[in-house]
Length: 235
Image 1 (cartoon, rainbow, N blue to C red):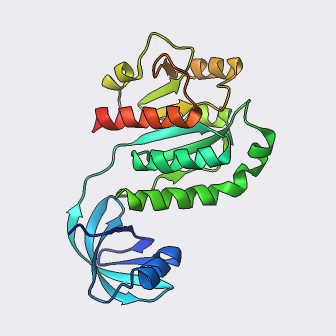
Image 2: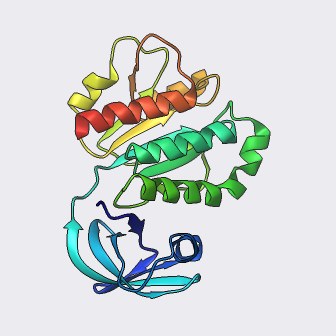
Image 3: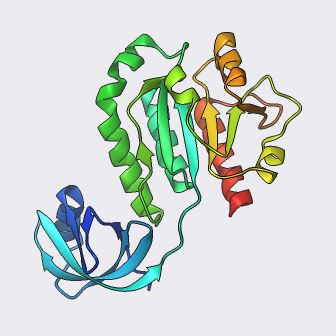
């Protein structure tokens, strides 16, 4: 039987801890007992964890053998902010597909009310990513940055920086990924797409425009499609 995986809130070489909601769920809902075994993600490794102490505030594990030490591929998503319900769905699904960092961006076409409220939503986005990472048995939780304006995100360092551009017809995303150097960074626009001046800024900063095909995709669909292609090709 596959052991359930948890991502440690704190860990050392010999012990790991869950606190807050995770501890409460494990203690109250799953009724964990001393001696129960789980997989515990600690940094870039996963180890067998044996429950040593349990309460609704804190669950402590004694760490045993390594289950996996495979580092995850680095994939960054620069995501323009759009309607929160759809953005949060994209965060969850992109986490399942392997994104390691998300940079929320206030774009020219981001609704002013959403831009103003974004700073208060970041902790919620991080919780969504944490839950999705555990559910999908990820080794670590994606980093979610504070929201920034596009200019601050253009210079993010990466081996391959790809702009998902509905106006691009020649360069397919699969072709770009076939010759990509890590880490790979995708930029996905808001509802209505990137403004012309923003496209010019991407080009000036050295980003490659790529296409996902001939159909026009919603922002959340484009993000997930790009991550799915990357997951398949980068394995």
